[in-house]
Length: 119
Image 1 (tube, rainbow, N blue to C red):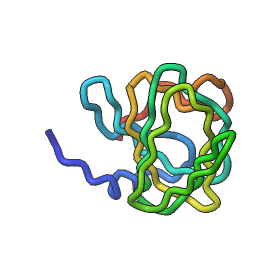
Image 2 (tube, one colour):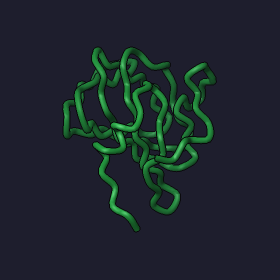
Image 3 (cartoon, helix red, strand yellow):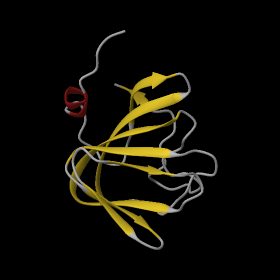
Image 4 (cartoon, rainbow, N blue to C red):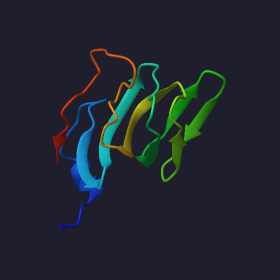
């Protein structure tokens, strides 16, 4: 039952697209990740995802539109919706999603991360 300072946790890593597990609420994971550049197009069959911008800004691309998220804003991507995060500059994001979510969803690539590191 220790408090968590997300800014402190973000200072513990510098790589991009590699989420860390910062906490867990029942079957829901709280993950921290830094983005820069383009991710892979993907979707999640069964799981919704929430993206909360802690620092910076990024675009969430959908096949029919783009949503820009600024610091302090969040977006929920419903399951089954194809999406791709894109960040021109580094952005810090808190993800709140079921623990079963694989970061690349239905796609396997060099960016797929299994067995998250806990910070």
